Length: 500
Image (tube, rainbow, N blue to C red; front, side, top):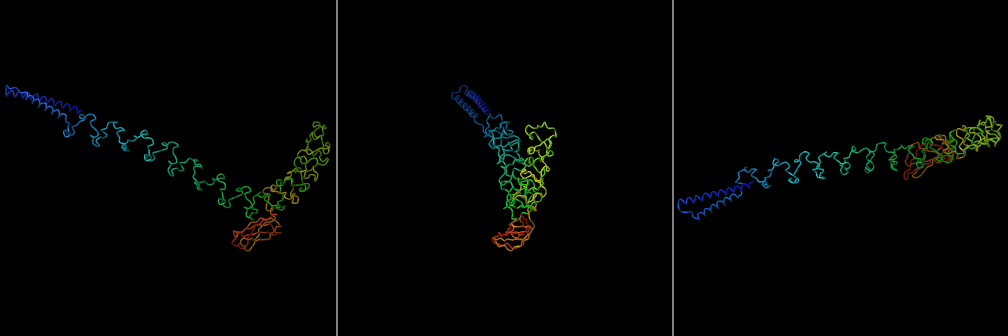
C-alpha cells in the first residue's frame, strides 16, 4: 500500500511540473511580445525554459522517490491500512508488545514456542493429556503426592526396587503368601512363632538339645523305644515308683533275677508262659477240665479201651467215616440208635470227636499228659489258684512276654525293700570307699536297686550298688570323682530294693 501511495505522489509531482512549465513558457513568451511586440522569442530562451521545466520535473520525481523519515510522520498516524502485507518484521516489534489480544486463535504453533518456555502456570487445567506427554519422560519429581493409584499401575510391574524401606506392612501381604523363600536368614525368632504351633515336622534333625528341654518335662511318651540305656540312668536311682506299668521285660532282667517270691500269686497268665513251658509236672493232679483242652487235643491213644460211651458222644457227631467200610451207612441208623455198645474199642480217634465233647468227667485221673496238651492251650483261667509254683517252673521259663502287663509289683521283684542310713569317712580325691550296711531280706548275690534319699553332700560323689556280699548285707560303693579335693564324710540315706 505504501509503494502505491509513493507511486501516485511521483505521478502527481510530475504533472505539476509539466503544468508549471506549460504556464511559464507562454507567460514568458507573452512578456517578451509585450516588450518588443515585434521581436520573437529566440531559440535560446525557449531552450532555457525547457531546461528549467525538466529540472523541476526531475526534482519533483526525485522528491517523490525519497523515503519518508520517521520524524516526518506524526505520532499515531500510521494506520493498519498504511502498512503493506508482511511489512512489520520482528525487529519492528518492541519487547513485550504482543499480548494475548493481538494473537489470532490458533496463531501460536509449536514452532513459535521457545523450548522450555511453557511453564505450569501457562497450562490450563486438564490441558496436558497422555497423548501430549512423550513416552518415558515422566520423572518421580513430576508426580504429586498420592497421584499414582493402584489403577495407574500395570499389574505385575512393581519390583523390589520400586518399594521403599519398610513400605510393605502386614496389611499389604496376602494371608499365606509368605513362604520359606521370602524369609531372610534368621528372620523368624521366638516372638514370631505362635505358641504351641511348632510340631515335630518343623524341627530339624538334632535341633532339640538338652538345654532346649525344660527340666522335669520329659515323660514316658517323649522317649523313643530303647532310648533309655543303662548309661543314661544314674546308678541306684530307680525304685518302684520310677517303673511304669509293663516297663520291665525279660531282656531287662538279669538271669534268675525273678523268683517265685517276686511274682504275685495268680498273676502268671497264658500270655506269660512260653510255648510248652507247662509240663505235666507243672499241672496239679485233677485240675485239667474240658475247657482246659483245645480242640482235637485228645486222640485215641489218650483214651482207655471202652472209655468213651454213648454219654460221652454228642448226639449226631459220629459220621459214616467213623464206621468200618461198608458196614453201616448213616441213612441206615435211626436217631439215637447207636450207643456205646455199638462202637468198637479203639475205633474212635481224635478226629472223630467233636470239639468240646470230652469233658473232665470223661478223663481218668492223670490221663492228660504234657504231650496231650496243645502248645499254648493252657490259659491262666485253666490254672487253679497257687497251682503253678516255683518248683514246677523250669529255669528261665518265665520271660517278659509271659508276665501280664502291669501285674508285677515291688513284692514280685524285690525280696526286700526299705531305706538304710550309711555313715562314711572322708574320701580322698580319685578314690572309692566300700560301705556294707545291714538290711533285712537280702541274701548272697542279690541284685539291688539303690536311690539316694538325701541331698548329695558333694557333686563329685558317685554311688552304686553291687551284688550283696552275704545274708542281710548290702554293698554300696562311694567314689570321689574329684582329682583335687576330698569328699567330706557324713551320713547319707538310701532307698533300696533287693531283687533275687
